[in-house]
Image (cartoon, rainbow, N blue to C red):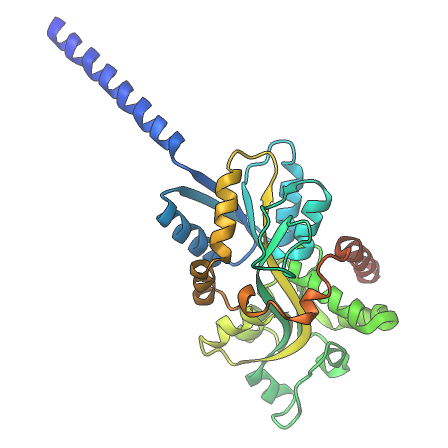
Amino acid sequence: MLSIICIISIWIVQNNQQTKQGTAAREMTPHLTAYVSAKEDIGRALLSSYCEVKKCTYEFVRLSTEELVRRVTQEAEHPRADIIIGGTWDAHQTLKKRGLSTPFPATSSQEGLQDPDRYWIGYEVERLAIVVNTDLWKERIGKNIPYPTTLKDLTLEVYRDELILPDPNHSGTGATILQAIFDGYGTSGDTLLRQLIRQTRLFTANGFAPVSYVASGEAMLGVNFIGDQQSLREKYYPIKSIPLDTYSINAISKLKNRNQQGLSNDFMRYVLSEDGQDILRKVSFGTPTYAVSQVQPIKKSVGQDIVSDYQDYLRRFNLLYDK
């Protein structure tokens, strides 16, 4: 019995030592936590490829853009993520304005596609587009009738209840559509928005959903980013994209009060590097920033007070929607 007790005691001591060693090893391994508002496979591809090289570990949570902003705001005193991947740049401007993010070190490689104070860095550009289910169009409208080419075209009575749009209260894509309406149509923006609300059968909680409805035949028309549409078009769904003249930057932000600032900085440099941008070309249908550094519709708007503009646009949307 004494021998058995001795053996068990030795085993417990050895096991405790191994556990402590394992815990110490895990604590020494760099670990990156991200909130991802891009498509899930983009976040996973960037983080996994980076950590494979850097011998780090990672975890991420996929959230819509507005969910992400709310969560980061709620966690302001005790942030749980090191870095934000994706989401339209107005969301990153909001994090900056609320004092929730912190600047990256200076980089000259993306001049014009980053916050002037470097609180966010753009890694790809996406373009809004109307998406049409071509089979439904032939059936309901006629194959010889031209497709709509502007947001105003979507207000025709024949399209009533045929349109799916993302809700700007939850979706960064929806916010970009509001920007297209009010920046593009000026004083008639409220009238156009009222007409589009009347036409819309459903406002979705995320930006990808409209093309899903259109591709599956549950709706004939939608508006979201052309990259989302391309991903389904390449799977042979009967859809056609009509590009609009509105662009948005998908960006990265680094949150304050986290202990992985150096790792976050290095990850940002990786995403903008040739290797990181090559990953984006393979898994994303947006355009990596290195290829659009001179896109004027983007460059001229970076640095403006888009947060105040968006809050005004959203207020006007909700007033019209409630009516």
